[in-house]
Image 1: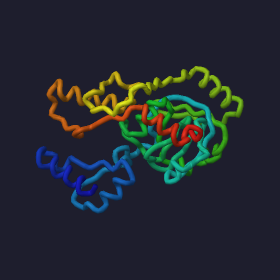
Image 2: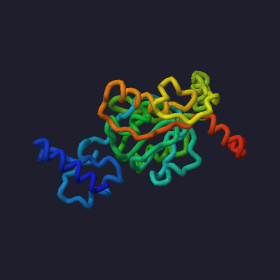
Image 3: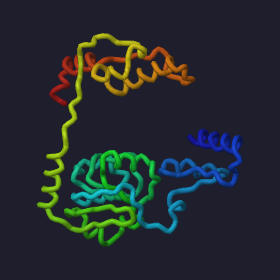
Length: 251
C-alpha cells in the first residue's frame, strides 16, 4: 500500500545515511500508479537505469515457435496461446503461461519474477524497447520463426512448419515425466509440529516444508513467527471430496 511504501522509505532514511541516494524502484504498473501520489519520495524506473539501451538479454537460449503479439492486459485471458508460441508483450505481465519464448518492451532486473520464471523454464527471454512497433517483428507476426538470444544480441528469422514440429517433437522425446507420489493412507488432520519435510506424499510439499520450518524454529530457537495452532489436511480428504462430488470426471 501507499502507507507501507512511505513507512519503508522513512525507516530506511531514519537508520541509514542514504538521503539523496535511495530511490523506490518502479518495477510494475501497479507500483507506478501508487507512487504517483507520493510527491516527497524519489523514484526510478527501468528506463532510467538502462538509459540508452534498446536491447536486454535476460535468458540466453534458442527456440522455434510461432510469433504472437499479446496485449499485457489480456495475457492471462488469452486462451489461444500454446507452449509453441513466442510471445511479444507490450509491458511487464504479472505472470505468463508456458510459452516457447518471451519478448517484452520493458527492461527487467536480473531477479525479476519474469526473469526467474523464464530461467526455471529455460525459456529464451529478452527485452527490446521498440519491438511492439518494429517492422521486422510485425512482418513475422503469427508466422513460424527461429529465435536465439545471446548475451549482447539476438537472432530472429522466419522458419517453417516442419522445423517447428521437428524441434518440439525432439524436445518432448527428451523431457522426462515427473511422477508425483500421493499417499492417501493418512486419515487424520495433524498439528503442524507432527509434519516434516518427509511428509510430502501425505500432505504436499508446501505443507511439508512449513512443518519443517516449524521444527527448525523449535530446534534452533529461531525468533520467527509462524501461525499459531496451524494444522495440515492430508491428501486423503481431498481425494474423498473429489470422489463424493463427481469432480474426478471434470478433472
